[in-house]
Amino acid sequence: MADHITDVAVSLNTGEETDLQGYTKINVDLNEGAAWLGVGKDIFLWYKKGGSSQPITKLQLSYNASMVEGLSDAGYEKINKNLNYKATIGSDDIYLWFFRGSGEYDTPIVDIQVTASYDQDATKFGNDWERLGCDLNREAGGAWLFIWVKRAQQTYICELTATANYKADEYLFKAGFIRVDEDTNRGAGGRDIFLWFRQTAGPKRALTDLKVSTTDGENELYRLKGFNRVSQDLNEGAGSNQSVHLWSKRQETGDPIKGILLLLQKKAVSAYQKAGVTVIEKDLNNQGRLEYICVNQ
Figure 1 (cartoon, rainbow, N blue to C red):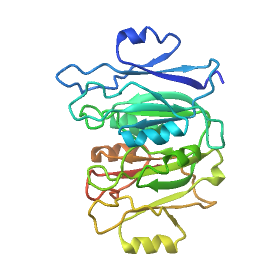
Figure 2 (cartoon, rainbow, N blue to C red; figure 1 turned 120 degrees about the vertical axis):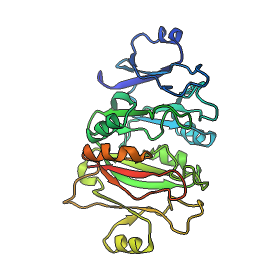
Figure 3 (cartoon, helix red, strand yellow; figure 1 turned 90 degrees about the vertical axis):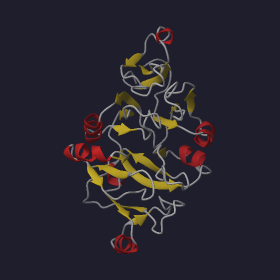
Figure 4 (cartoon, rainbow, N blue to C red; figure 1 turned 60 degrees about the vertical axis):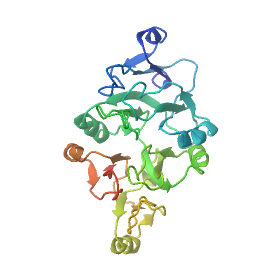
């Protein structure tokens, strides 16, 4: 329990930092490179271990109003400080949410870090860290910044789904799913589509193979090979004539999947591959921003 993270906080100025005694500061400015007219805030993330609070088991981010309701109704707590505060005009308002759970799909978080480079990202993912989906400088320019968490024990992905609206958010959060907080239709003009996954501490329950289909022929091939399809088209409403689907499979002889993430930077592909990560180089978003899915096994 003493090693588990029990509280998280955000500071927007040095005055707020003095109120966070007992917390550990992550010394990476969450507004790095995104200041508007030179007045962007120095924003820092903090965490605390131990104490009387229950361990934090999940962190999520929101960057639009529709993402908020499901998190709130599912019992997530919001840190009401914009991580993109006073960034560039048009940047998204980004908020951090946390949850203290004790269910089957809740594993305590024991460490949090923030990265600001492709190489750091790739190394973290290859070493079994879990990344929150949303870039903290989303639509603000500047460095690509991500929050990463380490859990008390190794977890594996046992289930995948996807949504094209926000109606099921509360149910999925309560059922132990984690949302990948980045739209697979980003910049394409289609619906807001999100991937979700559920974790298990048991490797025998883990998925062992993941595929992406972008043609009818691939759909038929993966079906014949016994893969299960995530029914939601990841590019729905974006004007494409071809659907994009995620397929998964569980086999006793396969290596369990420890983590997945969306990669939106083509320049980062080689860094992830060097770290031993599988990058499925099929664009989930064939009408907007390039998005690849990465798999850590």
